[in-house]
Image (spheres, rainbow, N blue to C red):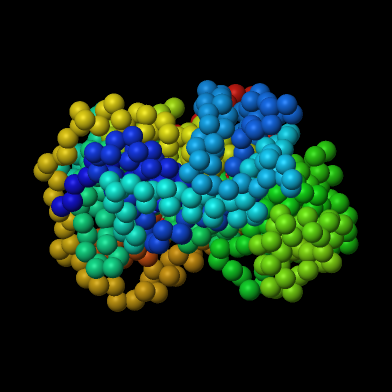
Length: 534
Ligand SMILES: Cc1cc2nc3c(=O)[nH]c(=O)nc-3n(C[C@H](O)[C@H](O)[C@H](O)COP(=O)(O)OP(=O)(O)OC[C@H]3O[C@@H](n4cnc5c(N)ncnc54)[C@H](O)[C@@H]3O)c2cc1C
């Protein structure tokens, strides 16, 4: 068994920032950070648009950023959390600048070149070309390297969180005093399962976009942290609010993940059009192509269904080529690689699952409902996003809550001890899987059910269908899990079926349309606000 002071599961913006801040504040603490693949594979590394923060106080204000966030969240944001994130955000962004993050500046001026995205009333997005996430991931990895008290493991896959359940106690979601003592972890290189005991554990495992067929999220986004926390009986909230990005590149080759055409392209002047050139967004919202994501995604979905077409189009042909190339070199190159010249051709776009607004319920210090377990980043539901996330608020959320979690851990850590009495992983009675097809085919069925029945537009009949299919899949997968030796693919499938169930069940509970959740059976908003807590 391994022992550590703080175990951090995940190495994106949330996990790395938490590790750096802890390591810096307490060089005597031993901090273990795990990532299930390599150090560069995270949703963070894929972020394009940037980080939203109030920067230019002459033009912008905290109040405006707060109002934009609340407006997008459609009545479900926690106003206290929004206030915290918006006010503390700029300080946290300044910190990563001191660690070496480069954000674009205006030519010949020492001011940041602030971008604008859908739903923002001002320019406030700090960015690095169109690969801001890559720049943030690079900065954080380099900064973390400076601290010898951080032990970093690649290819370590967390399977389950350890609680009193593993010591033989029966616990339920309402049992008081549930505690987390670390995690069982699969070392993918040796195939061995380690028990890592920790005084405190931080979940920073990111989102779950892979539960849908079409997603901008990389393959790591299988909702492991949310599923593990749910199994450990932590509260999970607002899972029905799945953000579909309106504009992923429609590519007939069927790429996974789908390539994102950042909202910043519309902020820069790109206009959504039909094949014939009609600017159709004006029919749906006065803000046209810059309306919030949920409105744009539903409008594109509706136009596609009505017209029987597989995509709509983003027109950038009127934009300045030099400016476009400076801002979006990566997008330009990608389009050109599949024969689309953004300066001459419309870019074909289609919605793709992009972001989970729901997740493990946390409070203003990042604490979950399980003691000694924190959660940070996309795996959480902090209350910032409500029923819909405002673009570029998620990297910010990760930075702000990493700081707060560290502030909460520091005064407590010396009073905690490593739990004894946790048994080693028991693999008796399991055998090696004979046919991988049992896993791959179940994965396809799961994604199909979610994409067709629990996508952008939902209904009671579709949700019922999804529920029936998911129940069958759940039973088959649990049986496979209990009899077969552990593999990352099997664990991910098991986690994704849990995520699918949580989304579907939350969608069923919400008998109204609000934010990202739209159902044809209840097309209107209720006058009171409720939360879907599972
Ligand atoms: C294409 C794209 C563009 C985006 N653009 C923006 C943007 O412009 N602005 C913005 O604010 N947000 C953007 N987002 C969203 C944002 O990138 C994410 O919400 C954010 O980076 C999540 O950070 P995180 O640290 O929570 O998770 P991630 O960065 O996803 O990191 C998760 C980590 O957990 C690890 N992990 C997962 N499961 C396990 C396990 N079982 N065991 C061990 N390790 C595990 C992974 O290996 C990874 O290291 C974008 C997302 C995508 C996909």
